[in-house]
Length: 310
Ligand SMILES: Cc1cc2nc3c(=O)[nH]c(=O)nc-3n(C[C@H](O)[C@H](O)[C@H](O)COP(=O)(O)O)c2cc1C
Image (cartoon, rainbow, N blue to C red; front, top):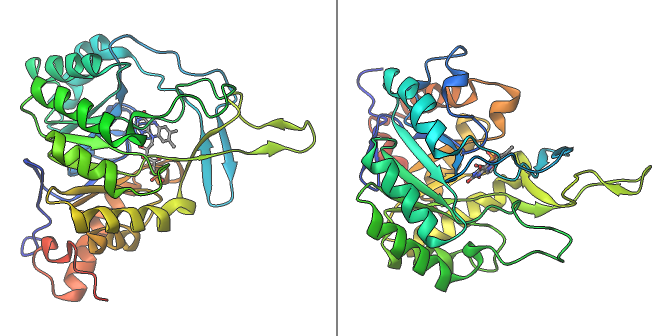
């Protein structure tokens, strides 16, 4: 284990391996510590935090699909106060590297969240979720556009959050766009240290017996293996035009999946829905990356980043 380095630097954050978890699929991290030592991950990414606690959407808010799942959780979270008081001390006690994902209803709210997190030692890096598909009323046709669907808004939000924190700042983007390079470049222009790709793809599931949508919110975000090829393509597209690194995610459930993202240009990866099948999925992927490097005679995992042959 000692002669292979899995260490990466994600926009200023040194991670002992390139594997974190996807926000919203791993609670606040500590819930999983009785399955495995969560500090063994490159970082723990916590559920989106907002200024005030949020109850989220009404159920049903999860629906299974072939090779994936639709969710419309609606950013249920304990709010920043409870996070700082009750969750953070446990994460710090366990020596976890923390990526705090934040959600606000204005650029100023994001900035306030980032500022508080930095001031109170609540994060080692910030991931700003500009791409949640589940907080708007779906009945209003497609709802208001996501911030991440407008490159101008992405640049503006990023600039404002950037000015509020010196922590590594990642901007989490949406796959629900025609060309991912535009918002990715806008995040870079606004001063982001990395982009996180991808959030969920908008989708719908209908119960044909009741003729009703399976989700109370009508539509939701699709995640899991079904979206992996879309995510790999978007990471590949973005990585070729950016000078900042990419945190890749979407359907990763095996070490080989994670390696696809690295080869496509991601510097690190996040494991999301796979954790629902196997709570230690992310740790198994760390181990599998090591085995792959050993098998391939690679002594530094960074050799794989963007190493796609074509
Ligand atoms: C149940 C659930 C809740 C999620 N909540 C959040 C969230 O709070 N903030 C966020 O940025 N992304 C959230 N996501 C999106 C994931 O972080 C990730 O981008 C997406 O699920 C793709 O990865 P996966 O296919 O490995 O799950 C959520 C996903 C799921 C399935």
